[in-house]
Structure formats: structure tokens, C-alpha cells
Image 1 (cartoon, rainbow, N blue to C red):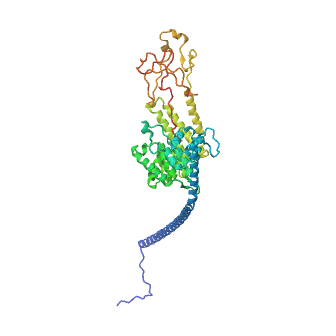
Image 2: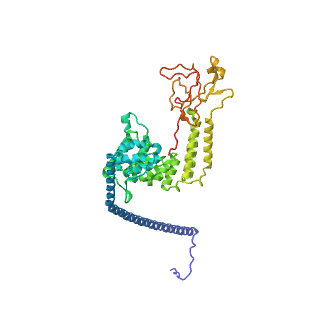
Length: 521
């Protein structure tokens, strides 16, 4: 039998392999990394849960505060209803008595002892509001467009004299809103009167606010408010007849949006419609404030990005300042991008082969308009330190100087006498003895490219002995000489100009074309 080894006796141990050692080391490293990863994961979960818990507590606290504020507001509204109604009834009764007195006594004027403002416009407005003559009120306002700033101060005071100001305003603007009725009677619609509608609707707001709690409650009767809602629905339905949002004129859009805000009938379901309308008419200076009043505050970042993508960087700047997103959308880069796009547009006009006659003029106008808009924006928002306007003003002066020099009449040779009546060259004294002195005394008529927006008159154009008075300090258009043999007079047309006077050519009506500002405010 073999002997059993003594446990205390040292035996020869098996030498561990190096590969086994590496395997064990790798396993320990993996376990350590896995433990760290799990530990970090659980720590992150704990932190996220803590943050969500804090956010939830903050929301609950905010909701509680809003609930308390809403309950307090409702309680205040309920408590003040009787007082507001009593004040409104007293005003209605007072205005009713004044209206009856005004109707019974045609010579009754200035019942409150107010001083006439000189031109009497306020007294006329006040009288029309007292007697609730909405049609005459509308006709009076639309004739005072040049005095719009004066009307902006006078109309709210006049509307305060109405027995029912909200109803009065709806009846006053019903001539053109929600549907322009002028076309039904005259066969064609006249000028846009959206400016008058917006002016009257804006003037109504301070008149209908609650005298106790302010703008949070409007003193508009349920009947009038329901009528205002029907008008808004009628306007929205008319969009299809007009060819969609893209084909609606900006004055109509502005009137519709102001109508919603004035009567407090904004609908949450129509937010997308409001957004499209605001973006489509974003160049109007009132649009940023209207957008906030329409409940589009949370959509402003997307709207601003859309305006930037459409090349309306200047409008985007106004929106950013209205909602406080200047840090997210810095104004200076936007203004520089706007100027860059304007220069590109002016360059494209110069390269247009179909508009070579006026290309330089139109390009300069585009650049001038952009420069003026940017300079005004820099001054309004106090950006001079970040965007000095000196270079912009110098460039604007250069363009205006070039325009002025281009308008100066060409110098007349010393051996020519100048006709004082029309500024054109006069034939030499002895030229009248020649058979064809008129033709030989004048150079050939220059080539003239007619604007496609002007109608060309027949060949026989009447001569004007003197330039129209409407030019003022501007130089009249250069007279173009036409040979009396150029064309025979057409039946029913104007007679051919007499031989002693050169006929004006170019624009048939003798007026230089008018251009609108590219950026109207």
C-alpha cells in the first residue's frame, strides 16, 4: 500500500499560468467598470427623479398661485359688477340726455364747456357720436386721412360720448368690413380704407374697458359681442372667395385681427390661422403687439425663424424686441443680412434686360429704402454702439446726391436761346425763314423705353406751353421734339402740336411715375 501523504508536508505546487492571470485581471477590471457604470446610472436616475420632483412641486405651486389669483380676480369681478354696471348706466343716461338735447336743439354745442380745438373736427366727431350717426361719422373720418394723428387723440374722446360705443363702431365700419359694400353700388371698389377701420377699432379699446378693473373686462353687451363674432366668421368664410390667405390684402387682414382683439373674441381653435395672417402681414408695425394679444407668444420663435428664412430680417427684429427674444435672435446680424439681401436685389434689377430704361433708378430706390429702414431701426432700439449708422448715412447721401445730379437739366449751348415757358431749346432767330427750320433746329428725339405700367398715348400728343405746377421744385421732364410729319392726326385724338412749340413726350400724362416705399410703416 502506498503511504498517505502528511497534510503538513509541503508538496510541489502547480505553477499558475500567465494566461490565467491575465484572464482574472481582465475579469476584475470588467467588474469594476460595470460597477462604476451601474453606480453612475443609478446616481443619474436619482438626480433626474429629484429634478422632476422639484419641477412638479414648482408646477403645483405655480398652479396653486394661479388658482388663487384667478379666484381672487373672479371674486373681484363679481364684487365690482354692480359698481361697474352702475357707472355704465349713469354714463348711458347722461349721454342719452345729451343726445336728446342735441337733437332737439340744432344750435346746442359744447355742453361740457370744452374749448374748441380750432378746426372744429373734435366738436363734429363728438356731435356725431352723441346722436349715434355712424354713417356720417365714417364719412367724416375717411376724409381726414392727412390728420390721422389728430384723429388718434380725438376719436376715443368722441366715442366716449356714445350711448353704445361698441355698437356704434360696428355700424360705422360696416361699409367696408367684413365685406366691402362699395362695389355693390358703384360697380368698382375704391381705395382701401383699412386704415380708418383700424384707427376706429383701436380707439374703441380705452372706451370699453371696465372703469373699475380695467382691460381684464370689456363693457360690451352680449348682443354686440355675438354680432362681432358673426362678423368675424363672415370674414373667414370670405377667404375662399378671395382665393385664400395669400390673396387677401394686408389692410383687410389688419382690420380682422384688430377686430378680434378689440372685442375680445379670439378663438384658440383659430391660432394657426392667426399665425399665417400675422406672418403674411408682418411688415405692419402693429403686428408684433397684435400677435401677442392673439395668444401667439409661445409660437414667436418659430414665427421669427420663418420671417428670417423669407428674407424679412427687419420684421424679425421688431418681433424679437416685442417678446424679449433679443438674446436668441441678435438684431445686428439680422440687420446686416437685410442690407446684404437688399444690395443683391438692387444688383438683380440692374441686370434685368427688360427694364434697362429705369433699372438704375429702381435699384437706387430699393437700396435707399433699405438703408432708411435700417437706420430708423438702429435709432429706435438704441443700437448705435453695436451698429454705428454713420456709414449707412454716408451711403444714403451718395445715392440721394446721384439722384439729384441726374435730375439736373442738360446745359444749353451758348448760341441757343432758351424758351422760359417750357425749359426747352429755341431755334435761332433766323431759323424761321427756312422752309424746314423746325426739324433742322432740334436734335433727333432720344430713344425712350416706356414703363409697362403706363398707357401709351396716340402719336398725336398735345403740346403744353408750360410745365405742370405740381412739380414744385422738381425739374419737369425733358421735352422731346417730334417732327410734324411723323404721323397724321388720328380721328378723335388730340391735335398735333403746333410747329412753334415742342410737344412733351415720354409719359403721356406728363407726370413722373410714383413709387411706393418698399418698407411702409
